[in-house]
Image (cartoon, rainbow, N blue to C red; front, side, top):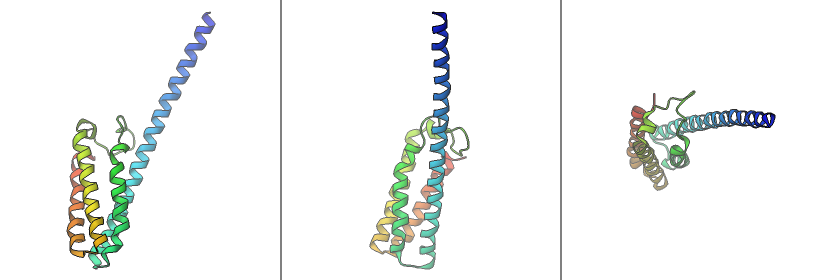
Length: 147
């Protein structure tokens, strides 16, 4: 009987070590996913900025803006509780002010949608105005929630 108890205890210890590793791997994966997504946002912002600066066809901003809308909708899901440790610039304020963080993600998403709408309408003036507003949402979130 004592040997059976030891086997069960050893199995539970092994499982808990494996489960802990799984959580760490999952957190690493989500950190990598959000880093990749934010890199994509920077690239998309750069593409739209070039269109605005060059006075190019506003319709060219549609796909980058739509990609940012899609990513913006995912942002909160990429910051699960406990994913603020490791190779991340996420501040603890994200989880301390979750409603504020979700609001910042929504502001970004809404602003990116306005850029997409302006691109769809081929309205260069609206694209420029909404692109500036979109940049403001990035700075507002980074100021409070990013190291």
